[in-house]
Image (cartoon, rainbow, N blue to C red; front, side, top):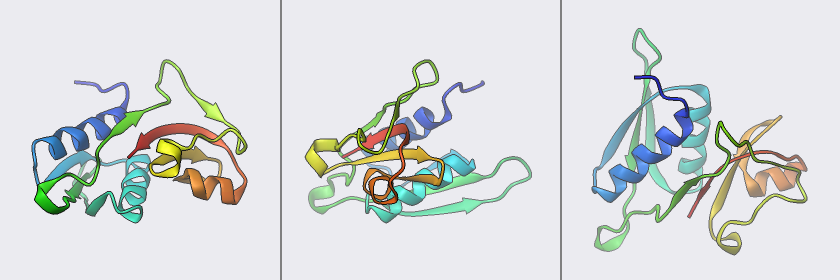
Length: 132
């Protein structure tokens, strides 16, 4: 089966796994997905990520994070820019997720970063996803 939107697939796998209270979820690896998982890790939405190399493209194992009463750390994930409708913003127009409580993941010319980092670096780009 060929996936037309691998980033949406990654977000959906993480969303489904956290809803089903799984501890880890495996996703096929790519540099973009590694960068997104690294942001999720840095922002404290997941507990860990581990890249396993195989003879094909490799697998990222994402360790999900839960708070007290087993509530998932991620309450929402939304894909913004889709293959059929790309969403680009310059640094003045970068969105604030939940009035700054959430995180937007932006793909810029200087790499994949959060909306705060993109504002600080003064560069815009493609708005990949919202997390809160």
